[in-house]
Length: 331
Image 1 (cartoon, rainbow, N blue to C red):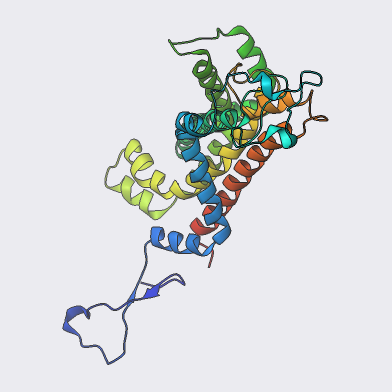
Image 2 (image 1 turned 180 degrees about the horizontal axis):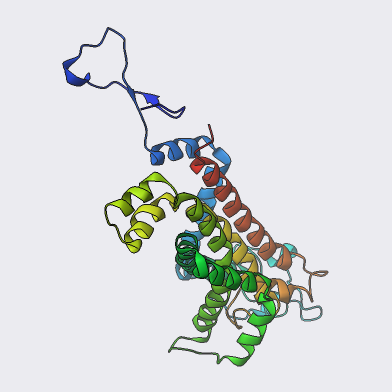
């Protein structure tokens, strides 16, 4: 058995009772998980991105508590903080103060901090759930197309080509305009989140489906697949017990890279007015509202814009580092 460049030297007991010379060390290989973690720890930029991602996720989870401790209700008006003549915050820098740590919204005086943390909850919920939905569909159809081949591969490939060419934003606008505000007993906010998850996830699965299909076409000719067939293994076992574990790395990497794309898509839909309905906040919706006042109160546009920028950048940095760590050819 050959030892790759990732192998390490560790003290092991001599095999078969053989004696080892003084100072001699046995060579022990590391698992792929250990190798990937060792590489990822060395990438400080990727680790910083991962820390920011976890911090933002934590903020989204405890958004109601943060609003209670450091902010005000998201739809509570504070007209006293607004100049009645110009409709802008009385204090400089967008009305930032000890009571409003990120300022207030022009005209209404709503707390920007509370709306930002609730916007994080909305954006990350849509991004994570739609990424999971895309990954699930992409893996199922990609595996089936790559392994079965023939007419199944042709049919799935043509569907992927069609969806990749379909105008996603126009379809989302049309769909949201005809669907009711509440569905399945959910409120208007989570009903719209569900619609966005389905739309974004459904149109996102062909990307990962193509990747999985290409990798499956390569793996299905490998010796371990032929060995499984020779002992009578059925197709479901080969797909989910033999092929899928070998596809875990590219699937994980692509999932982390598709999440920031989903965040931008949700922000774009909210900016166009078909995202989360008011008064529930969304980063894209806040940017849309800031268009009317960005000259007199630029802070109201800068804060949600910076949140989108930091979140997408953190996910991309972490995804790039994860891709490098899981690359078997990297040293």
